[in-house]
Length: 266
Image (cartoon, rainbow, N blue to C red):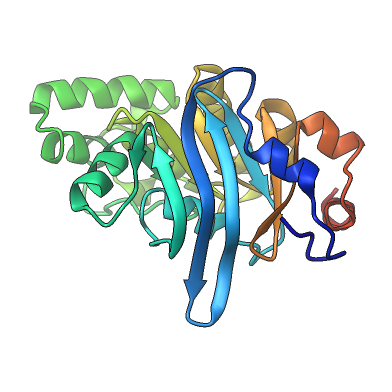
């Protein structure tokens, strides 16, 4: 792995990125993943392992490949080279593999992507009923349990347009959880929110992390990273530049590119 600032090989970052916490079972593995858009290479041979129940926070400047990396994990983007394995299933062009991985992987985006013509309850129950063939009564019971978990059960009968941005994002989280995923991917889930709504979404994510959910979170919320992350991954120019614990990142980052980024946002 090459530091794009100095041209040197960042072997320490490479080693950390490919080792899971403790002796934990590997839930997600990226091995030499490359993604190109035409002549532009968005991901340069990404190597990363995430353990079961581990929370990995990915930070970096805009255009560094953070969102592209997690979008490749559930095939919203097709990688051009390398291997992606989720819970023992390799992501290939086989539709059955793609469907299996998507069933086990929930994703929350910057935008909420709720169906405006459906109530909150119907938004949350739609996928379990259609994909997992769950009976309506069971799906609604599960939905209410999840809305309680994200702290908005009283909003069940409302429509998305009647909710605040923070409430809509919590509905989106509940919707993803309704498929009972083993992995949750978050792509800057608070970036579209007003500042006063950010904490209510982060609190929900903290609850998930404390409950043992395997999570990869792309975010600029350094407080969340410091409080919840098992490891922090810093990306720049489509590469993993440095990996470490929150304490490492916020007290003793090693790479010049990391230090520059942190000096600009902290």
